[in-house]
Amino acid sequence: MTATAAAMNLASGEPPINFAAHQVRAGNIAGARDDFEQMLAMLLAAIYPGARAITANPGDWGIDILLGELSGLVVIWQSKYFWPVVGRSSQGQIRESFDAALAAAARNGYRLSQWVLCVPASMDPPTAQWWDNWRTRRQRDSGVAIELWHESILRGHLVRPDCAHVRRHFYDPYTPAPAQRAPVRDLGGDDAAALDEALFVRQLRAAGHAEVGAAKREYFNAELLAREVLDKRLPAEVLALAEADGVVHGIWEARFNAVAALAADPRLPGLHAEVMREIRESGVFPAQLRAGPVHRCGLMHRVVQDRRAGWVRHWRDII
Image (cartoon, rainbow, N blue to C red; front, side):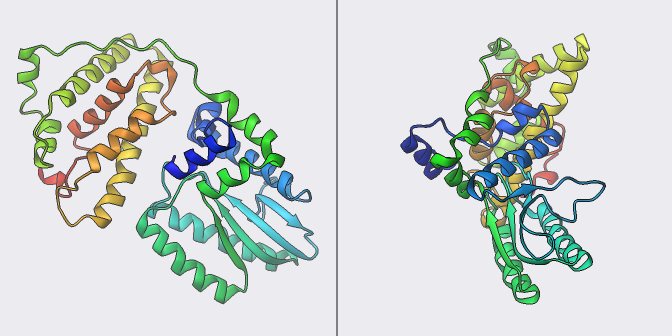
């Protein structure tokens, strides 16, 4: 959540709105997409009383929420739960959704006046530039007004008095309850020395990190937790470990792409700090894993150790 958005929520006297709540409610990303769409339907019905959701049966004509009559002129809101950032991989889906909406309108005899993309995150710089260019071109070619409702705009709507019931239903009750976390263990001198040549340490050194003691401790504790889960083989915990691995890898990938697009320094200054801060603050880690902030950050180091990520532009060359 941005500082501006947080201040807006504090000023309203309401708890902060975190769109990760949809994953907490639904338990996974797929369910979060449906939950986010349901929230949008309620939100739009509060703002525009005539707005209604359209169910796919088997197709939805490229419509998630509709205002107007399908015999005349309509406005369409398209829900896309892109998380944690709207990046390059989202561009194809955005193009396809708009083209599908245009084609359905032409095929079924109604006119599209406006198309609004709704996302729970913000765009990284390259995608924002792509969006501005694409939006200008497609508005000109199609004659359809195109808008973007990103996280800040959605929060602005949700703090309106006439939308308070939507905010309460989807966000207020779903702050995760404190769970019993796995203990954090100290790393002995011999164990710390044994990690000096570990790949995740060499990646940090390549990025200019002088101190790596905390990183070693994080990795050590994440390894203990992962081994315990894999030894016990409880299906819920094994699935939770895999999900947490996907969460940290996804956070790294989104931040890496954003930083790499802007930074001239191949060491990508700030990348590690941004990734670890988001991992510590994220509310989407499965409770079954019992992972606290130290374990979560350690899971990121495990991804680096597995040669699936790194902290410099040329991270694949560090072996």
